[in-house]
Image (cartoon, rainbow, N blue to C red):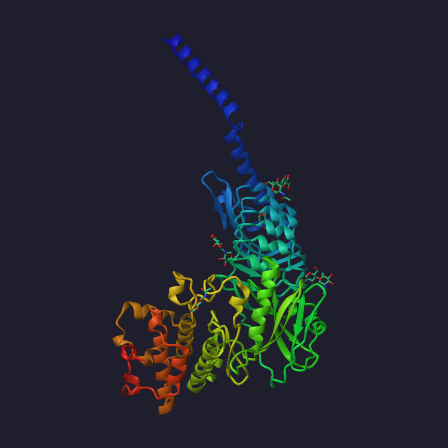
Length: 581
Ligand SMILES: *[C@@H]1O[C@H](CO)[C@@H](O)[C@H](O)[C@H]1NC(C)=O
Ligand SMILES: *[C@@H]1O[C@H](CO)[C@@H](O)[C@H](O)[C@H]1NC(C)=O
Ligand SMILES: *[C@@H]1O[C@H](CO)[C@@H](O)[C@H](O)[C@H]1NC(C)=O
Ligand SMILES: *[C@@H]1O[C@H](CO)[C@@H](O)[C@H](O)[C@H]1NC(C)=O
Ligand SMILES: *[C@@H]1O[C@H](CO)[C@@H](O)[C@H](O)[C@H]1NC(C)=O
Ligand SMILES: *[C@@H]1O[C@H](CO)[C@@H](O)[C@H](O)[C@H]1NC(C)=O
Ligand SMILES: *[C@@H]1O[C@H](CO)[C@@H](O)[C@H](O)[C@H]1NC(C)=O
Ligand SMILES: *[C@@H]1O[C@H](CO)[C@@H](O)[C@H](O)[C@H]1NC(C)=O
């Protein structure tokens, strides 16, 4: 029995040894021991960092320390450090190479100082890195490009300096990049940022970045927020296009326009026609310091918009297009034809194209500059929205009707805007409205005639475009209807659409949807105009394009009296909907 048990024990031991040896061959050596050593190294690195100096006399396990999260194996996966009382701690005191499992590092708004060490590039599993609102200085390490799993990188509100390393272009998973308010980041924006296909948010504002915006930024299809310098703008994407939320303008007098077209020896067309025939290419370059970022007031997938004061004192908006890759000959021809059409447009409610430059290196349009910015901006501003009273709002709508009607019915061939939205209605200092970005979408898609790439702004696109992709005048009518409602409601009518589709319009009163920031119109005539506008707008947003009126029809209706529907406060949307145009 004793023998047997010894033998058995020996057998068991030898089998265990055998298994152990097999394990040694088939898997990394001493995995358990390595884990333990690694966990101990992490604990030691945390103790040595002095970040948790207030824990120095305690024996509690490091995984229980404030802001530390470990996984089931005991590896630190998350560090959130926000201690601000007591002493300053140095960022580089934490030995980053000791944390191979770290996924999340947040030392935002803490008493952290020092430089960002190169060693940060060892945290290759990191998905979230935020060292913002600290006292960190020095340059951004190139090794940040090692953190290819990063989705958010926020180093804002520090004292960082030097250039933005182009290695950031390796961070293919990045969604959010914020380097703003460092004051000292300088040099140019690396074109490699154009590789960050997932980027949605990019903020480099309040730094000393100069040079021009690399056109590769236009590749960032997912970008919804872009902040550069003191500029503030959005880039909407369906297809990318401009939306300038800048401070656009109008010149006081429209003077006589001269056209000057100089085909150069390369066949490049350079044409600038303007008030006095005096704007020269050199003036534009000088006024913008060769399109320096500090003159930029907006940017988008197709290019950037700059504000420039010319030697004559006139202020213009320059829309500089990015380079083009498509078949050059066709593109140039098409561009020229379109420009010729646009240059002939003369309407007091359309922002005037003052000139253009078509050149291999640089392609831009020159427009009047509008002082009050877009209708969207004015409606979003509590003070300016009040200034835009009912009379002015009705006038804004009438101006848009005149502009679009002119395009659809007085131009041969008719021109379809394709992108009417509150962002493309610009207001001058007297709050008179001007349609802008006319034909941009078609200009930029010369190969599309009626069939089109979807161009337009989400929330303004006629529903049929979702399945037919055929652009007709009725698409503009729909977008106009949305803008007209928005003007009366003070906000995008998205919620109203939902209400209209889910509940009876019978119990929605007109007064319920009007902008509540303005007092109800007191004057009878003004009240009637408001009713008229809402009625026509509701007709324009009809889901069946054949039921929508034409711009001509709307224009003629605007000259008539609104139908009498009883006292203003008793008018319901149902009544307005039921009334045939
Ligand atoms: C921690 O500091 C001690 C001495 O202060 C040093 O011997 C040790 O190597 C350090 N450990 C780590 C992980 O930095
Ligand atoms: C830790 O203990 C030492 C010696 O008793 C003391 O000087 C030090 O202030 C303590 N540290 C903290 C954070 O309490
Ligand atoms: C990072 O830390 C800051 C400050 O403590 C906090 O406001 C923020 O929510 C943290 N971020 C995440 C994702 O936990
Ligand atoms: C980048 O990551 C690799 C591991 O993937 C590591 O070996 C290398 O040292 C890191 N480079 C830097 C500069 O941190
Ligand atoms: C920022 O860093 C620069 C040097 O890089 C230094 O001269 C300056 O004093 C720092 N500013 C602050 C507020 O720390
Ligand atoms: C842009 O910034 C860099 C680095 O600060 C500087 O060397 C260069 O002169 C600046 N260029 C212009 C046009 O200001
Ligand atoms: C970015 O856009 C592409 C399509 O253009 C899409 O497939 C991808 O999921 C988007 N990424 C994110 C993070 O939204
Ligand atoms: C575009 O539409 C117009 C009328 O809407 C039609 O006359 C014309 O033939 C169409 N062009 C193409 C290329 O389909």
